[in-house]
Image (cartoon, rainbow, N blue to C red; front, side, top):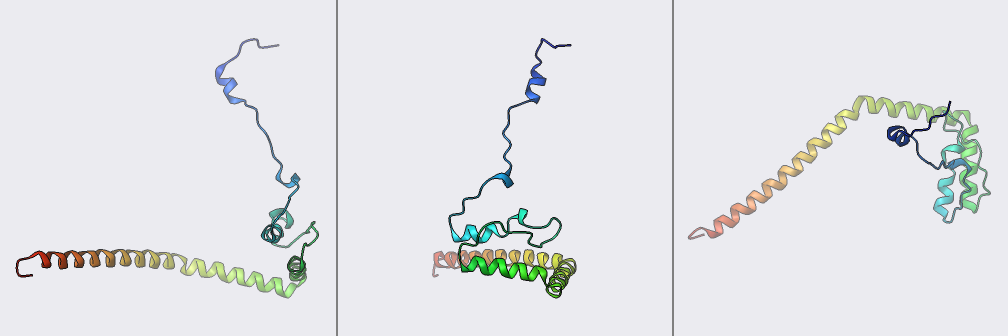
Length: 136
């Protein structure tokens, strides 16, 4: 069965679109920074881990060779990986224990700074008013 009439609402539900598949794009890295950052692109890692899976580009310079080599070495070192996991766990525990306290302290410090500014402004105004008084 063919529908001959058009409905404005139904027409609004559909639209032309373009889909860009980022992993399919060929990267043209121009700067050293882009080369260094390319090592950390998400598609280079095994899913669910921070282990470098592969780096498909030829390292451009000694810095890149060093980075890729050290990351690969670290990923293969069980003792190092265990240390990283322990550090991550300690960081999470610290955040759970002290994170809110640190944020509260920062908010309090910001309020104190603002109040100190207000006090300084009021003192300045008082001095100006004293100068304007007769005999001041």
